[in-house]
Image 1 (cartoon, helix red, strand yellow):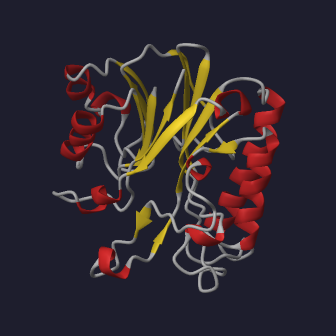
Image 2: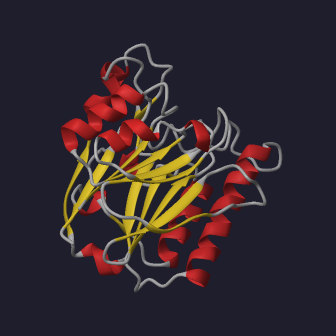
Length: 264
């Protein structure tokens, strides 16, 4: 089973890139974030034409939105709201074998890493705290689960281009890393990609639009993640981070697809 996550930054605007991914890499399950479209306008026909007939969507106009698109049957589709907001950041469903998939889009948090003056950053921290508490209260680490998405935090030193220079930049601040680690520890989640790429090696999934030449400057961050619970850790057989997709035309996303393969 191949599971892929991608912050697509508008599924309708970048539909040709999504279809290219499906045609060339054939993931069994594709989880998208920032779909930026209401459910009734989601381009389901194009996915179904390619055999991805099982779709769970949770969208809103021009903002946020998540979707699970699958060639495999999906059961128990549901959505979860956080921080008393109806902002379409979490959709979940169950795959064959009882594997539950959670697709999440964590708030970015704005630019100022101070919750006292930045409501967006305060929202992000509260969002992480709620997830940390909800998962162990409602799920067991013995349940086979996959958590994917744009978590908007690069937790490790080599998940960013410069650890020292980004310590006070939102997405790599100590408080964010602490809260993401607490979430990971809450169910003993395993960082699937870092099972294959040692923590002392640089690894990015996002490059800013602000860079004149993103590839030459290579100032990336690893914001997109795939985690699995312990029952699935031994089933991981491979990964891919499609760095080349940052240059796909037309109009690439600033994020790239991340995939893992599971022998299940």
